[in-house]
Length: 374
Image 1 (tube, rainbow, N blue to C red):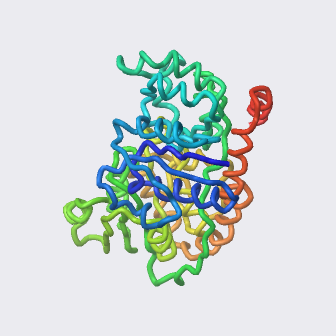
Image 2 (cartoon, rainbow, N blue to C red):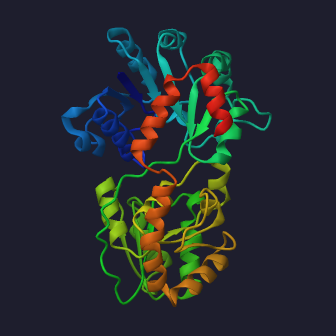
Image 3 (cartoon, one colour):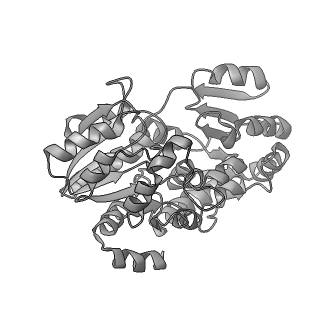
């Protein structure tokens, strides 16, 4: 089958290179012919380009004209399936030409954070410019299979009549080989200092708990060192790795830490979606300290995973103090329980891709029946 992956964000930031790269590799391994369309404003500096090498035909375009780059591909060659891998940020500015070209082609969309797309009235959230295309959007996507990643997100998309189904967020298979625990626990925070991720709350919690272990922040951007120097100084043993990390580099960081912190705030839950960091930490068998906003995306809480009783600094500090006295025992439990949770609940790219292709191949009535079971 000829498949076109369309990603609305550049393939050099966040989880996009891992997610789209793993989809591409799995589809190729199943015998499909795959091309990728994605914006790349820096033209050629994306980790994705280096990761998949010459096996990917990547069509680069500015974000504004992304769909204009898709249309020529649909005209030139037979495409059996267009998979929009990040539909929540495309803004749905569909041209008439694009929707006409898609009519003979199967369409599949992935929506990572559905809540920004749906307003309080249960209709598509839209700016004045976007309202023009919403009628056409509803007609096109009304029976299009849409993937979300937590059960609580299905109802949000069904309010705008999308044929949604929850598939577990996939993570790459991990070869653990973690470093032996040291004399002190090492705590890891991954990602930028966005408000929804709660880094400032975690910093206050570390100071309140008088954290005596190590603290490491990776992927925080060029200001990460200055932020920790100003707020932690020499009171805590900390280190940073500010650059965006590839999936292999991030796996190295997981293997060389003991505890992963996800002090996510209410804004994370409000957006919806799964936490790739949480599932990656579990797959590596790490102890997890998180708020309920992150833990609530799991079907159950595996051993070695701890939920703070609030998303404020005092609650997270109490959680840290409660586990640190026996952190090695908790780590031993997490080494087995985390990967077992990931395996038992189907968080693999193989199962994910096969289920997605089955959704795309179904007729309307079949999808309605599968949706009722999801």
